[in-house]
Amino acid sequence: MPAANRKPAAVPPPEPTRQSVARSAPERRTLLIVEDDLGLQSQLRWYFEGYEVLVAEDRESAVNLVRRHEPPVVTLDLGLPPDPANATEGLEALDQILSAAPHTKVIVVTGNDDRENAVRAVGRGAYDFYQKPVDPEVLGLIVDRAYNLFELEDENRRLARKERPSPLAGIIAASGEMTRVCRMVEKVAPTSATVLLLGESGTGKELLARALHGLSPRAEQRFVAINCAAIPETLLESELFGYEKGAFTGAAKQTLGKIEYAHKGTLFLDEIGDLPMSLQAKLLRFLQERVIERVGGREEIAVDVRVIGATHQDLGQLIEEGRFREDLYYRLSEISLRIPPLRERTGDSVLLARHFLDLFGREHGRSLRGFTEDALAAIEAYPWPGNARELENRVKRAVIMAENNRIAAEDLELVVPDESMPLNLRQVREEAERRAIERALALYNGNVSQAADILGVSRPTLYDLVKKYDLR
Image 1: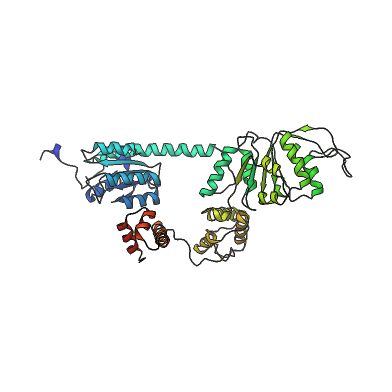
Image 2 (image 1 turned 90 degrees about the vertical axis):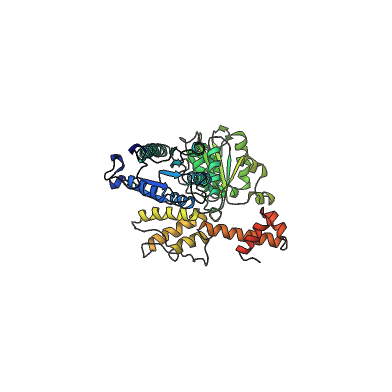
């Protein structure tokens, strides 16, 4: 056979021809090769010996490796088992890889006559494509170019995060419930609307109020907070509206109130549900007219201030009981934001616990290595009636008192639950599926046809599932 027609040998030549592949250990890059041909696997693994090479033979193992290692670059053969003759499995793998790691550069490898699927793959988000037979030299150049682009984009993202201040500083959350609240804060903050924050004690109402101020055009002005429940009724009026010299015994000089002091800035009225009825009318007039009169004075003073109210009480119930003015409620709640309690924020309790552990560990000079498994399970299972404030106090005490280098459930004074929700997604899906089938069969008194209709599956499929979960 002429030398020009020979296929690339699976056995490597004595010396590599690409010097750029060999890298020192600290600079080793991760590369995932998704290929079911063992000979080609071996050839590519040798050729990219300077890389941290991961190898997968099918879609499931490839997606698992992407989720675990998040490789910057992936080479993906579209012809994967169980149907290597078609690109269906490979395209599905591409979708799942990009869903798990959107910034990963995927280079699809196709057959010599499969340009159509290669173009489809690029249209679905692949970085580039390469057609077989594989020439490692050319593929190596494409991989290097993909790495360079990934590193450039990654550096840009890091710089953007570094230069852009956190819009919601101090708020630790990842749950969908809290993310929705944060998005609403970002939308409302630039406006002048009066906002009412509703939530249990310890849910972070003041943090969100400060975020509303920090994201507003008033951010450079004062943020003035007053707790309406912490000041005696006899002093609250003068605290809010100020007073003139001689207005009452001890009024030795003219003093500005909190409202006037917050001019051009933001006024945060915490626990506004405890505002006395005698002051509710005066506050309502201010919200309507944007003018105040100091105690003992007659001059109307115009004040430009954004008002944010907060309460843990049910204002609707207070209105029914005649303890809160309905017209004031509507003035305060131009936009209402309900802050979910910690027990409704999936995953946030563990996230907050780790944040507090790092914070108090540094503060108290403790070198702690995290939480034990039983502690994490207890944190997830506990309802946290005191919300983030209770969690903060328990973690702080545990940091001070813990005798080991990891905090256990007993250090937090929590009880380990008998059963915790499994983290394995397959187990979670199967449990949810089994419960849905049980409910459907119970709802329709064992009628398989009706149960299949409500579940959205065929009767044979439902029979298979009933057999699978032994529900007969």
